[in-house]
Image (tube, rainbow, N blue to C red; front, side, top):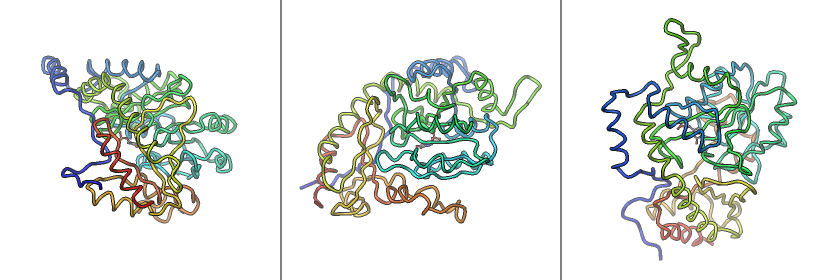
Length: 370
Ligand SMILES: *Cc1c(COP(=O)(O)O)cnc(C)c1O
């Protein structure tokens, strides 16, 4: 029988570097009294990340969302942006807050990314860009998305918040499309407390993104853009640098746990796991499971786990196109696959410190219905 945990098991837990390592980093901040505005750690973190992600052009931000908002602004887009409803609020909000109109494309049944088969039919003369999401670290069909974009002269900006450090056939995922946003939020596989980065292809974006995250200031006496304050501070960069030292062991520990889940839950009728895409080096950020024709439904499993003091997450539920803030603007029925996956998906606890015993307990609870 499974035991009840005294302390709740959450879906994730922020990875913490050894405290001494962070304290050591703080010393030079105290000496220089340079706390933000592209200090020394900011610059070091930026170049380390360019190396690690395999993306030679990168700009840091206070968080991933601000990076996405500002890169959309940088392209001076107007009109419609094709995107996915099966994502975090940030993706759509970034589009809408730029005065653009999201057009929701359904997702595919296999990896829950934008369905490339349905993409081109949504292109109109007002379409200016595509914003797909590498959801759960599953890579979008980047080749076919790019082909549609090329045919219609559209920008492609990836929400790569879930895809930190991932590669396809040895290429960093940040090299796809015109730009990719990575998130370093505390709940992500890699974090700088809050933080984010945008990797981009065209050189001119380096200056523009730098200016946009600093109020649009272009010189001592000139402000050419209506920018925001999106700067990453030195404490964030220091945390990022500490965590970057440990990222490979973080990912390999997560990998072992993910494999454990797969061994227990794989091949069970009614339980769907994402197949691993060939050639992809994953970061094992999430453990999504879709219950489709299983003995218990998603909500029953969620509740049962809760009784055991284990908190899985309905991530993503609901779909963005049924949010209250967008009421009356979109129809969730237009993206039926996304609606169904959102109603049946649960992301299970997964983080480096998670005990393999807890993975077994989660699986015991789930399989107890079978
Ligand atoms: C976390 C996340 C974001 C936003 O990142 P922040 O760094 O928290 O601003 C955007 N999109 C997706 C899919 C995310 O999971």
